[in-house]
Image (tube, rainbow, N blue to C red; front, top):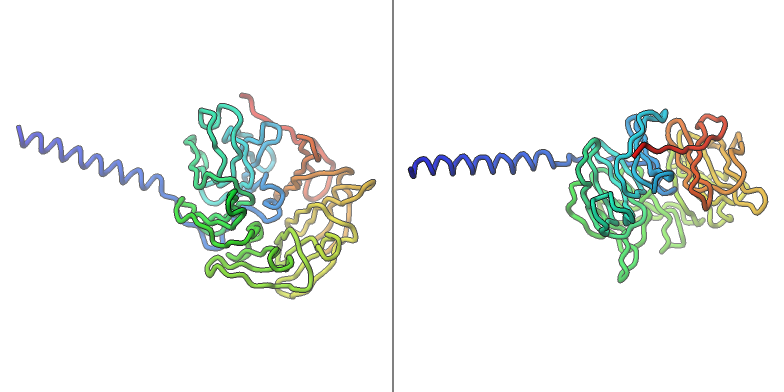
Length: 336
């Protein structure tokens, strides 16, 4: 009898060990290449509402409470992935990372709970997303195997935080408010608000920052094909670009810019103006200016084929082909 109980006990122990090992294997998040980025800097500066990865577009659907959706680049195979309002979407490998606002409706996780924070979700999984930091935050950016974000605390204000994609090693890496949207080769380029808004580079490996340009104030940095595009605070927020290799500055617009995005040598910007405000497209060198739509727009997002934007003050989303063409309403939902 004792021998039989010993055998049963041994089997139970083996099964428990096997289950624990299996859970660790299935929950393991592999590390990314050190130069992996989760979204373009231009999209992140515009709220991270759209993110394209491997032919799939993940987006916050303004037509459905900002819930997380996916679709093919041509708009087919539309899916609602998560009934929770999201922003700052990042994608790499088998996982999505995003910031989630507090959900006001019953449905995201089954109850009205405080759900604000940084989350990781496995693509294709119906499991509840994993919360990596339950906190108010601003821009979230994936760099290698770490997530960088502007962490807010009522006592200490905004600091740059880091958390690993596995969910550990969460801590502040700078006491300064560093915008982590513009990641280039593993480093963060940002307007240094403590140093007169000079263009600076923060190196996460050493947690140090160096000034790159010290003769002008910059704001909202977007990287594309070897250039950093920015709004020049010293010149009434007109659009400029800086060549990282050539190390020269070029002025691109004669008008004040409210917001902009750049992808594949195409620039889209919101022209500031009391009577002539408009969303404008032009080439990366400032040539070929063309008005997309008159009026004021926000959330300028870009994928390989489309430019998406939202009417200011309204829940109306539009899109236009990146290569040029007519504007159309982007109004999509799936049947509930």
